[in-house]
Amino acid sequence: MRAVILCGWTLTSTCFFAVRARAVDFAHDVVPILRAHCGECHAGDARQGGLSMNTREDLLAGGDSGTPGLVPGKAAESELLARVTSTDPDFRMPSEGPPLPAEAVAVLRAWIDEQAPWEDGFAFKGTAYEPPLALREINLPPAQEGRANLVDRIVDDFWRERGVARPPRCDDRTFIRRVSLDLVGLLPDPARVEAFVAAADPGKRAALVRELLDAPLPYAEHWLTFWNDLLRNDYTGTGFITGGRRQITAWLHRALVDNKPYDRFVRDLIAPTDESRGFIDGIVWRGEVNASQTVPIQFAQNVGQTFLGINLKCASCHDSFIDRWTLKQTYDLAAIASDKPLELARCDKATGVQAAPAWLFAELGQVDAAAPRGTRLEQLATLVTDPRNGWLSRNLVNRLWHRLMGRGLVHPVDALRARPWNEDLLEALAGDLVSHGWDIKHVLETICTSEAYGVATPAVAGQPQGADFVFRGPLPRRMTAEQFSDAVWQLTGTAPAKPDAQVARPPAPGGGPPMVRAALVKGTALMAALGRPNRDQVVTSRPADLTTLEAIQLANEQSLAEEFARGGAAILAAHGPHADAIQAWMFTAALARPATAEEAAAARDILGAAPSVESVADCLWTVTMLPEFQLVR
Image 1 (tube, rainbow, N blue to C red):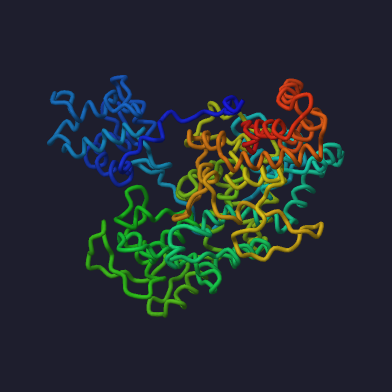
Image 2 (cartoon, rainbow, N blue to C red; image 1 turned 30 degrees about the horizontal axis):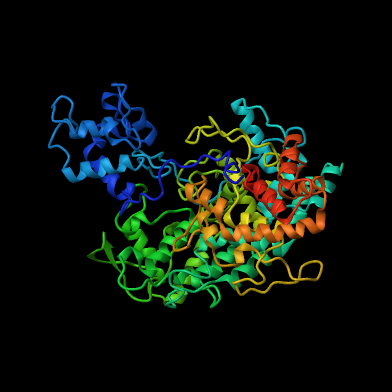
C-alpha cells in the first residue's frame, strides 16, 4: 500500500547518494570566468552571434546557430563548452586572445554537469532598479464593487491593466484550512469547519482571520518557525555543545505572544538585552575560520539579510559580483559590533585597510565610530528602525507576502533591489505597517482578509517565474516540516509530552496544557528530511520540491509508524467501530472536506469490514501522504 501513496509528487531524478566533494559556486567560480572571457561580446546589451548570457534563460536559448548554449546536466551537449574547447579559430570562443585556461574550462564543465545553477535574480546587466530609501506615498485606486481592502484596490487595478480576469473565490472549506495553516499552523477542528461552512454571514472570513490572530499562543508557536529560520535560533546544533552559541527562544516566544511592535522587536535584537543577545553573538566556530565567518562579519551578514533583504555574503570576501555592495561596506557594518579594530580581508587575505564603523545608508545619519560598542549598537538600532528607512518595512511585508502567497512581491526575497511585480502594493503595505505602529498582525490581517488572498489557487504550469510573473492568487505551498509534524500530532494525539525550548506557556482555553508544537522541540531526522534547516545560517526560503530522501522518510520513518499506530487506537475508540464514520472524520479532520465516493470506497477497503488499530493507522497514513494533505492551497 505505501508504494502508491507517493503518487502525485515529482521526485528528483538525481541520485542523492552521488555527492561531489564541493559543488561549483556560481557567484565565486562561474561569474568571474564568464564576465572576464565572455562578457564583452555576450553580456548586458551585447548579443554577438545572437547569443546573450545576460540571464540563464538567455544562455539556455542559445544564439543564431539554433543550438542551446546550455544543456543543464550535459556539458558535452552544450554549445558553450564546445566553443571554449574548440581548436577551430572560426568556432572557438573567445574569438580573440588566448583560449580559456584548462582550470576555467573544468569549472564550466562541472557547473553545467551540476545542472548549471544560477543565482536567483542575477543578470550580468542588472535592472538598474533600486527602491528609494524612504517610502513613497501611494494614492490607492478607487475600490471596485466595494472591494475596499488596500490589497484588492491595487491588485484589481493590476489585473484590469493587464486584462486578467478576476479569479474565482476558493470555497469555504479550502479557505478555513488555508488560513488556519497560514496563521496558526494547525488543521482546523472538524466541528469548526462544518460551522464555518454552514454560516451565512458574509463577513465570516474576516471574523475567522481575527479569531485566529487573537489566539496568542497558537499564533506565536507557529510563527516561531519563521523567525527561528530568519534569526538562526535553535535548541541544538553547531556551537551549543561548546558554549559558542546562545538561543533567544524565551525572548522570541514572549515577543510573539505579546505581538511586540516590529521596530521594538528589531531594536531588541540589534542592541540586545541579555535574553536577546544570541542573535548578534552569532556562532563562535571551533578552531580557525575564514575571515568571512568571524562573529562581526556574521553580524553584518545577518542584519543585512534578515532585516533589509540585502545579501552581504558575497561582499564578505570581495566586492560583490552580483550586487552593488562592497567589501568595505560589509566590514564597516561589521565594525559597529566588533569590540576590536577590524582589518579588511579580501578572499581571506589581509589588505592592510582598517574598517570604520558605519552603516549602509548615511542619508539617515551615521553611528559615532568613536563611541563604545554598546552605544554604536544602540545608534544602529535607531537608524535601522527609523520610519524613513523603507528597506526595513518593505523587507518584512515582502517576507510575509511570500509566506502567505508562495512568492514574494520581490523575488527572490533576499534581493530587495530586484523590481517588485507591483511597486505600489509593496509601498502601500510597508507604509501601512509603519502607520499602524509596526503591528505585524495588522499586516497579516490586511493580506488575509483581502479577496486576492481568498481566491482559488491558480494553475502553476505555464506560469512565468521571471520578470513576466503575473499574480493570479496564492500559489500552493508545501507544509513546513513543523506544520506536517503538528498536523500528524493533532490527528493522532501523539504530541511530545514536553517542549525542549524553555518558554512560558499559559494553559490552553480548556484549562489543560496546550499541545506541544514542533517549533518547540529539537529537530528530528524526519523534520530535517522535510526541510527544517540546522540554522547555522539565515534561512529565508525552504526547499519547495519533494526529494527522494523525503519520500523514503515519509514511507518508512519509524517514528511516524509509531505515531499512526497510537493514533489508530485512539481514533478507533473515538470514532469507530464503523468504517464510514472513521473515514468521514478522517477526511474532514485532515483535508477539511468529505471524501469523494471513490475515496470513501478506497478508505473502506483499507479499513475493512471490522476496522482494527492497524487498518485505521494504515488509512490515516495513506491520507496524510496525499499531496493535498501536504500542501497549503
